[in-house]
Length: 488
Image (cartoon, rainbow, N blue to C red; front, side, top):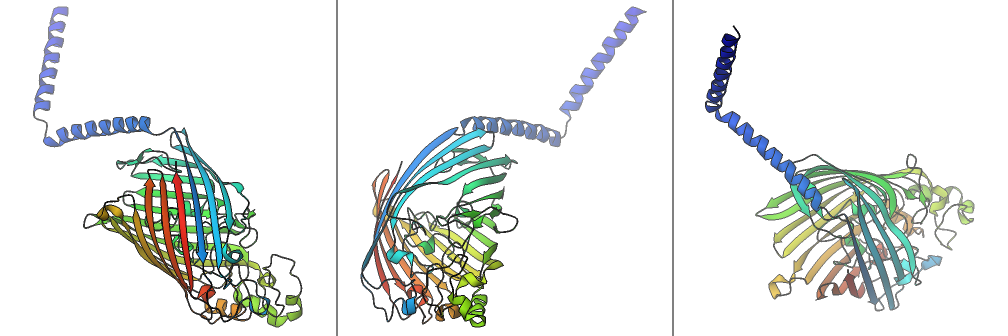
């Protein structure tokens, strides 16, 4: 009986083995494809693990930049009329900035990166940084700087990446960027002390102004009143979701306690700067480009132009008295003062940002933004509407691939209530001649960058600024500049 059972088991095993071979031999192509897909997936996972091992664990970089600007005397029908202190001097002046920055990056854990950037600045602005609205001639200038060297922490933040697949791309090591591989579908969350412009309103041809244009009108949309202290930095949280050629960004950042001042207000549910940006990267005739749509909404303790005018008309005696809150230095007691009208107000704006490579050595850009123009400038430049465009040409075609030639135009406009406020003798953060013959402020910026050594560049720059402070009774202004820039 046991022998019969043994033969039966052997026969069943043989039948099972033959059946399995028949099924496998007759398997449809779909099953074979599934096996191939499983193999590809396993290979992809293996590649990801290998790439993760190749990611930089840490890096360190540094930069040093010196910019010297000079303007000759220019024509002006009047200056600082009726005690207004915010005119650009019509006399010849020299300005300079010197900055040194160290950049440290550390991979703390899988997907987690920590960045630190101590910085130093020494500066001497034209006319105490007064008299130019959206076209400040040197983007490095800060609102509270001095000729004495000042050290501070520009950035200290954590960045966490959550990967969702979709293929990988290689990222070069650089300032505030660890080299390695990033998945095309990922969520990146950044929080801490940084600049809003580290994440929003970027552009390959007009954003990294230590290598590009000099004028602040090309650093970002000039009408983008992004949350920032007097040095241009803030504390906040941002999230970026990458899905192949698309990226969506949102962020909330702290605003200054007072307009254009250094201390930040950390009551982020009461006063804040919100922004959202949608980006699409594309290829047209084999040339890469990108389009970005940006919107911002700020809620801050700030004055509207109309309320400041109404405060003067309602109670001129109070307006003439010293204001208990933050005020700009005007000696004209008959002019409106923003400090009497400050309350919780909202400012909104929307802008467009385009970049397109035309040929391997030619790229063009365009930015434009419209803000509501109802309230004072809180953090950035004196501009309610802005437009900039231009081109950058690398030196490939004349045998110097690391050189670059750039030309750009920028125009800035004010809202009607802003013009009315200035015409009554009011001043804002940067401008106020006592009255204005309103015209848009415009600048043409032309530069040539020489690559001297692998780590050193020298740039010559010329700027033509029309209607400084939006005033056709003054100017035009010619500004000549030179920049020495080093990267290590």
